[in-house]
Amino acid sequence: MIEKLNIVPIEEWFSGLSHPLLIAGPCSAESEDQVMATAHGIARMGKVKVFRVGIWKPRSRPGTFEGAGSDALQWLKRVKAETGLLTAVEVATPTHIEMAIEAGIDILWIGARTTSNPFSIEQIAQALKGVDIPVMVKNPVNPDLELWIGSLERLNRAGIAKLAAIHRGFYPYERTRLRNIPKWEIAIDLKSKFPSLPIICDPSHIAGQASLVPEIAQKALNLSLDGLMVEVHCNPTVALSDAKQQLTPIQLDLMLNSLVFRSPSSANNEFVDKLEQFRNRIDSIDQQMIELLGQRMRIVEEIGEYKKNNNVAVFQLRRWENILKSRIDCGKKLGLDEEYIKNLLQLVHNESIRKQADILNRKDKLSAE
Image (cartoon, rainbow, N blue to C red):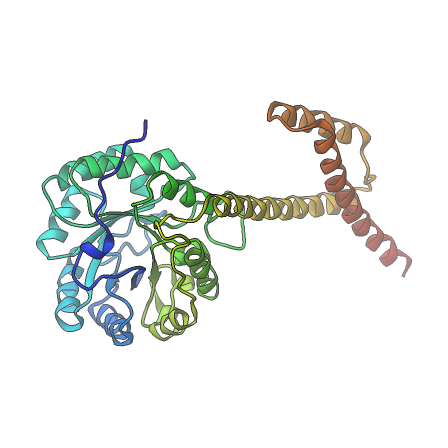
């Protein structure tokens, strides 16, 4: 059973914060000069209120840069003193929390890998009992809404009322245009269940490329998410982590000037009206379907090349019969009409045959020449 969350609005976290909340800073703290140059570049534009930086970086593989560690906490004291920006860091252990609070960090966030582990979240929740500090929780690596909600509930039970979620997309098992699949419908479902919960979008981790960050940021704003958390580096070309997805301060300023910031769609501050929720969920699913069809067609092309090299006919009747039977049976279990599935499969199969035939025809044409 999902419990009601006791949430303090973003505007009440600190004096001067407003909606939508804009957060920016490097993926990693690499050096004091890099942190200060980036912070001053962000502060000069006067739009961002919170400076974010990773100082303890849990990387997928050992041997890669894992942040400057606790030394960077002293650099963040300088950031606050010289720019007036609030500071935010990622924490993954009770020790991280203790050091961050002692250093005067203003906001903590919990990363996707940590959110995925209820044991870690419970340890963090216990360490935060009695502490009045805002905490933002990134979605888990895989699209598990209940796991995300569970992390928020554990923290809220521990007394954290200045609570927000960060939507950073979900790990794709196949290569896609974006680094992480947005699956906007999950963020919409979360907001529908907890209308008072702020949801911040991390367009950098969804995009994976700096050029795509503005597109994702605008989509988040169109869905009435409550802010943006953007990775910004004074010189992304030499960044030690996530170099491709980080903007320069100038690029961030240009993006923020170009974005359309929309008001909530209704006077009673609902996320979006019900019909719009349904439409956005469909849009997200349609995009994933198209990307999957693209992945399928790339495999079909590999099959076509294999058949060409081994002199195998394009159409294989037994294989087609197996596809029809297995997919129709699967569709029936999901409540889908048999004729609908059959027609859909026929369209996909016809395009697969056409693509493979083109590959074989190219071989025949080259042979004739």
